[in-house]
Image 1: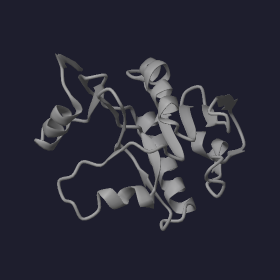
Image 2: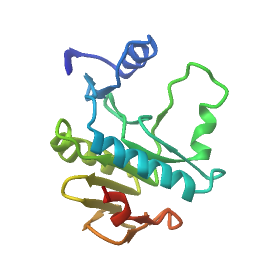
Image 3: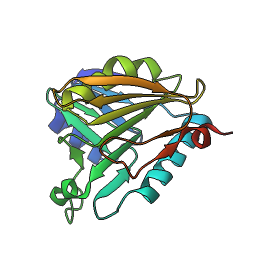
Image 4: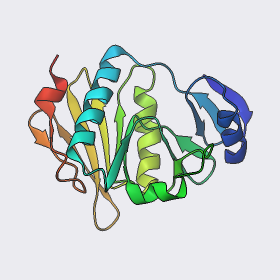
Length: 186
């Protein structure tokens, strides 16, 4: 649900910290509630989150679901999954009540397709992740059983590829090899 009134990021943070129920994003100054997700969406998120958490060194990376990333112009998104270097958390540790919103490029950002947000993720969120300079972006489609990935190249462009089977490792996280056949297994 989009709320028509525009707001600044500061007003957004105040709104979220007020304890209002729901998962809220800020899309170019417009407050939008993230809709609930399906079983299949949640299953993919939970499996991938668990595997990444087990495969990555906790001294170097933390794997989050529904934490926030920003870009300029009053836009704050809650990716389904994001891998954050532990050093990025130093600004938020020991500061109760401080909303963690990451500006720096991340090694991996993941969106899982859902009926309610599928087109929006591709048309709006992925271009924002590209603008942020995130090193790798995954869009997983649980029904088509595909992983589309965008990998940042040295010149700042992105190379897109689609995977249906086998193992895939994020370029910046080679230890995090994900078996797509297991991920998509019922």
